[in-house]
Length: 270
Image (cartoon, rainbow, N blue to C red):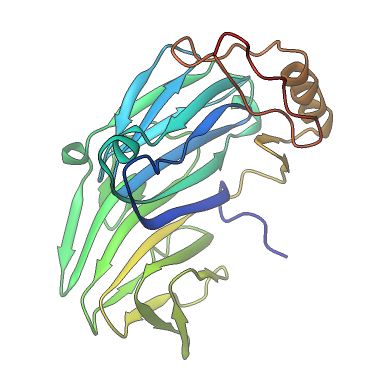
């Protein structure tokens, strides 16, 4: 069972959905260690707040890269959708940090869409969200060899995944594609072996996220924690349970408990 592609260890699609007024979905403050979250939207808006003091709206085409390192907490609030209604569609990927970087200081980096390089050729449009591919490199701070590309294919267009990386995959966000004689609809992750031809053809207009890189070694993952050492995850669980991980300054009135713990009592001041 494949659990990672290059440094990518978790991949979560949000939507597509259209929210009515008062229908925003909030993700309360929660912790991370040992990874970087890469949040990228196709539509809508998310308000990010973290324990470094960051407060920033994530909008389509931009990249929010939050490096957890030894520990960070953050919340994700759908405030725009709750106030005014509207669409929500995006991807959050988790990138495992190399062992030597697992305990670095946490950091937050934001990259607007206009600083991320774009490629276009023969019905293929791509934005290099992170890493390097197709002769272009994003100015995004990454810590191991990788590529992450938002790719749009016109009907009949073909794209070959970069062949300079040993691990490669493509996630079908929208549409229908063909690869290696098989047809894949949206919601499927196509993983290609090392040295395998990796060409994807759009049977209809399609949106893909292309991803991969070099492996960083095996990782344990439990809840929101990633580490090369199981005992480090146990320590993070204990720290969160005991309240030793600082909540975001601008969003510290509630939090998500460990899944195995009972929910916290209601806040009488809320």
